[in-house]
Picture 1 (cartoon, rainbow, N blue to C red):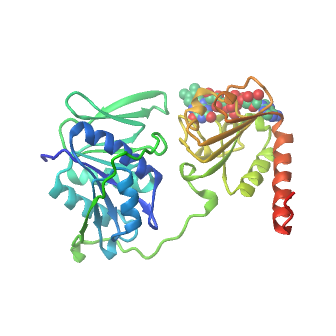
Picture 2 (tube, rainbow, N blue to C red; picture 1 turned 90 degrees about the vertical axis):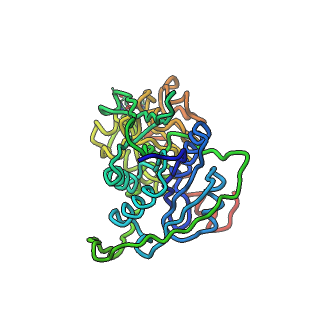
Picture 3 (tube, rainbow, N blue to C red; picture 1 turned 180 degrees about the vertical axis):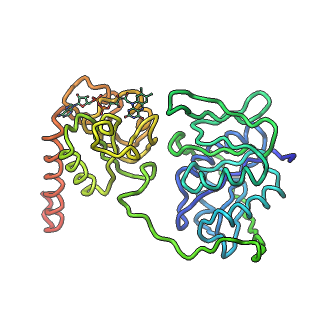
Length: 339
Ligand SMILES: Cc1cc2nc3c(=O)[nH]c(=O)nc-3n(C[C@H](O)[C@H](O)[C@H](O)COP(=O)(O)OP(=O)(O)OC[C@H]3O[C@@H](n4cnc5c(N)ncnc54)[C@H](O)[C@@H]3O)c2cc1C
C-alpha cells in the first residue's frame, strides 16, 4: 500500500472523556508528524462530540474523523476492524498509533492482519530512523531485553503504545481541527457478531494503569494482615492496591498487581509506597506518578530518592495511624467540625 505522510491515532474515549493513553499517542503522533511533514488525524468511534473535538485539538490533532454507526457505539472487534480497514485502505496512512489498552491490544493485531502489514506492540518509545521508518522500542523476555522493532516493507506501520510512558503535552500553536464524519456501511449478511450488552467492571478490579490513587506494598509490609491494612487505606482514599515483586514473591499480592518494568507502568496522581525498597526495576514502573509518598523504616532506602514526601517509620504503625486520621477527618467533615 503506498501512503501519505499522515499519522493516524485511534483515540479511545469513555463517555466523551479521552483516555490518557490516547492523549499520549497524540503527543507522539505530533512529534512524528513534524518529522514527516504530515498531519495528525484522530479517528474516533461514535458520533460528533464537541467536547472531544476540543480535547483532541488541544493535543495536536489537525483533523478528526468520526466513524459513526449504531454498530460502532460499543467496542466490537468485528465491526471496528471492518470500519478501520476500509478507512485506511482508502486513506493510506503512513503510521497508525493506538494505546496498548485492552481494546487496542485486541484491535491492532486484527487490523494489521486485515491490512496485510506488521504491528509493533507495547512500545515504550517511538522514533524515526534516517529512512523515516518507525522504530518501536519495546521490552521483551520479561523486561530483560529492550528491542527495536521496525516494519520496513509494508504500510501502514502500526504500533500500540504502553500507557504512561510519555507525558502528554499540548502544542503551543493549537488550531481548530477539521471534523469529518463518516458512516461506514456494513453488509449485514456478512456480520457474525451480535452485541447484546455490556457489563461494567468492578472498580476494585480496575486496571492499574487507569488508577488515580495507588497504595503499593512491598516485602517491608511484613505480612498478609498488613496488606489488608493497605487494602483498607486504599478503600478510604478511593484507590487500588498494588505492589512490588517482593510482595508478589511473598504471596501477598497477585502478579497482575505488580508495578515495575516487568509489571505495569503506572502514572497515578498519588502513589503511596509502603515498605518498598525502590529497586530500579520497580521505580521504572512508577517514577512518573504525579505525587509519591514513601514509607520505609530504612532512612537510606532508594525509594526516598524518587519520593516527594518521605516517612521514615514502620508500615505496621504508620498505616494504621493514617487510617485513623482519615476516619477522624471524615467524622469531623460529617459533623461540620473544622478541627
Ligand atoms: C529482570 C528483573 C525484573 C524485575 N522486575 C521487577 C518489577 O517489575 N517490579 C518490582 O517491584 N520488582 C522487580 N524486580 C525485583 C526487584 O529487583 C526487587 O527485588 C524488588 O522490587 C524488591 O521488592 P521490595 O522492595 O518489596 O523488597 P525489598 O527489596 O526486600 O525491600 C523491602 C523494603 O521494606 C523496608 N522495610 C522492611 N520492614 C519494614 C517495616 N516494618 N516498615 C517499613 N519498611 C520496612 C526495607 O527497609 C526495604 O527498603 C525485578 C528484578 C529483575 C532481576
